[in-house]
Length: 430
Image 1 (cartoon, rainbow, N blue to C red):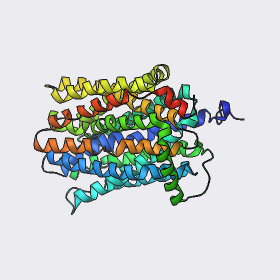
Image 2: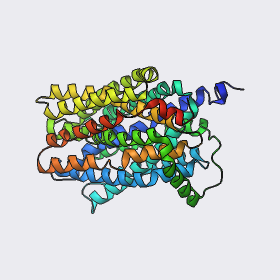
Image 3: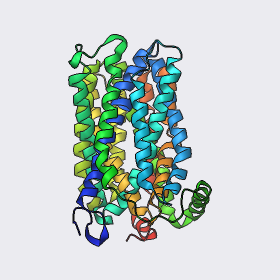
Image 4: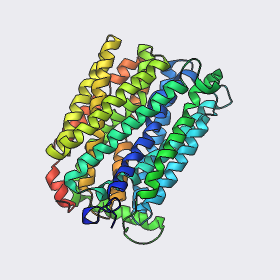
């Protein structure tokens, strides 16, 4: 048997593990260039009369995406656990790629430009997040519980460096005043064209995952949406058996609100409050991705040593400090300090959250439980963007950013009550 394909105890081998990690490299171009740094900042500057109004409009797109994902993710997970997880991953990835490419051709001066741009973005974002439900569900089959932390960390680390590579390509090819290859700059086309880079990057580097990841046997049956709903209802009723999962998901629901809002509005805040140019914004994004990638790689080993809960708690505390510092930063230098601190701990937070969930998931219900994982990350995630958007519109972006502190504080308090050992035992993964 080929060791690259099948590891010990019948687990997938190196090819599957590294193709799984490479998918993080692929999809990080979307979150880095579209959601966080390039397109979001371009949208707020070009599609609205002022940064505050643009921030409010963009926050509505994020909010609609979050609600759609919260509604669809648990059902999608239950459906995938009946078989065909890889097929759904491919479908969602291709939809995200197509919608992202389409953003290139939405001009700010065309009729209904805001509605069209946000509709296409929401489609891409929902497809991206649903793809993550199926992608994350592969994790528990790739490694035993004592190695899940580092594998998850590898994925996040590789992903951040993938975002770094895409940002570097954007900086060299698209963002300069005179872009390469004669790319036109009229109506900001060179900035919109970064979406073509994202689409191509995502598609190309996803191919190994499409080829090497294999479905385990599901719970049985074909594509039956009604049965998926019944499976979902059964899991909800049985959550009493998985008390630590429920408690963890509530904690993540809160601290993740703060995290995703930082992702969605970090670039917007840098432009609107500190006057970053697009070239400076890309440099800023590169620095964040380097710090986040190194943090995710390093803390993957810490996760396996001290546990997912402790790793998450440490990262939440650091993110709270970084948020407060960023809101109060009197100069660009202090803003950079807050951003690098946030970057170092964003990666470990996401990686350890995913690995802790993988340890808590019972066998043959991976997609379904990761559907709830996505649900917890999105069901109230409109609150962070909505709160930031409203306060930015009424007061200032600083007030909006400072308001995110409450999400980290409340999430950290609930996380404190999670019993990691009990959660692992309940899943039968001890």
